[in-house]
Length: 364
Image (cartoon, rainbow, N blue to C red; front, side, top):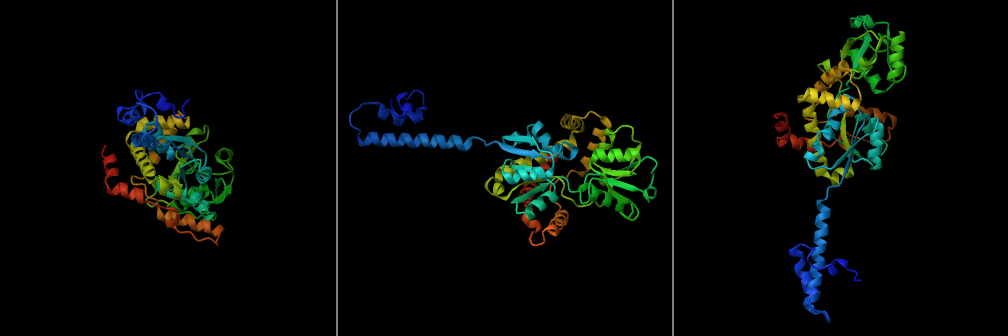
């Protein structure tokens, strides 16, 4: 058997334009003339070009991750649900990896090409030597609201009482302090801040009266029954919101350098998905309900309304917020030098705004 079975099969199974040089080989026999050798070389070149073309045109599947099923991450799974990655020419596999820190770890390991992470997670990883960069941020503040007992009707009613957080330095701790200051109260002096654990522990402490309130993501309180409460203040209501890069599209510098067009297309899909969330409320709530596995209408409505106010039209990274996160990360490792420019590359978003893409999306 010939080592080239394709040739033995004859020319009929090939495209006519590829068969021409092969016919030179098929006809006649005997010693190989210069013409025949030339024909064979042309045949090999033609086949090589065909294989190269087919490989170059085959889309590589890109693994994209999101870190939460809550409303702040809705544009990530809306992009998948509505086929927006495919719309912009990306064969994407979208996966859920709980927590921003784990997403960042997956990016560094290379198992995920683009994922979302907070500015804090990015800065901490970069201080540790990770080659990460945020190419955009869809929410640039902490999406929290301050839940208090229904008997507390004003900021003064909180004086002398306590709020529950997960742990010192966490996003819930930052949110509690920012919201208290917005109410004209001084954290630790006017209102005590207690470490009580995660959301279930905070809810339990609230129910028993150990704490008078706690910071919570929008709408979450509606999932807890039998807890008389009110929302005293929300981040979405602040005129000057606390700068915090909360939902950053993140990748590695090496992947961005070698796959810039793919990253650009993914950002286009996410911007389109953000507009979809804002413009098509009921359909977005249905998708949100599907991914969060919740059908509590009060929760879905409250979360949707708050996050709609926080989603950025042009997803640039808050440089002020990233600077704060870098300073906090460097405080734990002062020997390292790190600047905002080392972990933020907004060139793609700037280009998309400049060429009118974002305006066109929001005019739909």
